[in-house]
Image (tube, rainbow, N blue to C red; front, side, top):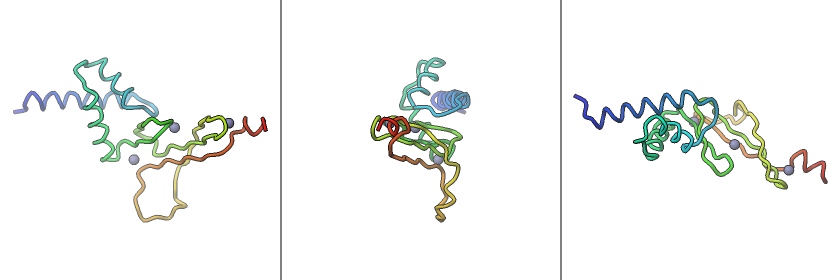
Length: 125
Ligand SMILES: [Zn+2]
Ligand SMILES: [Zn+2]
Ligand SMILES: [Zn+2]
């Protein structure tokens, strides 16, 4: 027989999974927490963090550092920034694969930060 605690955990897990399914792009743990909390106010953020950590271990979720925040994605396996050193603007761009690296390891996801001067700042020079 399932204990009440176990049943509650299963219910929580289902709820989080449902909410993640609805998200189309990158999200933070706080954003997910607010969505889940709306449906069940007994949720604690620690549960969300634990769940996100488990999904990351299973390679079902990828995490990146975006503008000093940790963001998660269920499908995008890369997250790339062009960061302007003059005005601080951050632009996102896509890199599909790292085949050129020729490494033996299995890549789950990657992040690239490119620093330079944006088009706008180049014109103002
Ligand atoms: Zn990953
Ligand atoms: Zn970003
Ligand atoms: Zn700039």
